[in-house]
Amino acid sequence: MMRVRWIVALAAAMGLLSAEPGHAQGNVCTISSTSVSFGNYDVFGASPVDSTGSVSFTCGTAVRLTTVGLSRGQSSSFNPRTMTKSGEDLAYNLYQDAARTSIWGDGTSGTTQYSTGNPADNTTLTIYGRIPAAQDVSAGAYSDTVTATINF
Image 1 (cartoon, helix red, strand yellow):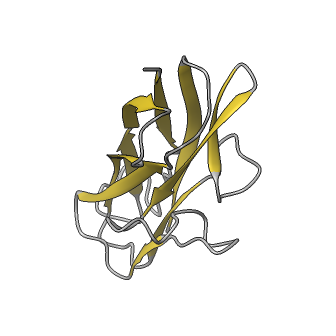
Image 2: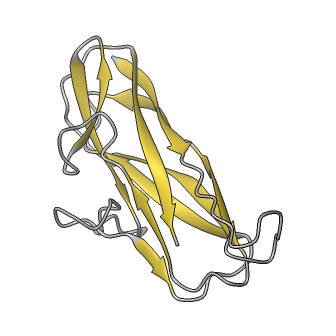
């Protein structure tokens, strides 16, 4: 039985703006993330491999509209995203919902962003990842780097 091990690293882009420098309650947001790590992938498995990661952010009281988007990573499109190992691709995607129907992107190409009108302190959003079954790839570590961006 062949197994493939890989990790999707989610790099967080820091969005920091301040109406009054040093004023923690103003127009300021910070963002951080945890990686989506799928573990082993069985090329003979009949089911997709699912995993989760997260994006967390905190905004000051002056922030009213916030969106959080995810980049395509190294892929040329959002559907599918691809992880690579020495030029070999393994398709996967990242979603906003547990049913894995709403592709989390930047709001273009049929993707959606997280959006809120009044962000709460210490908001944590779950990223739902999936690798479709039946991909014929060689064993090894596959990876991609996706950037999370907060707009406020």
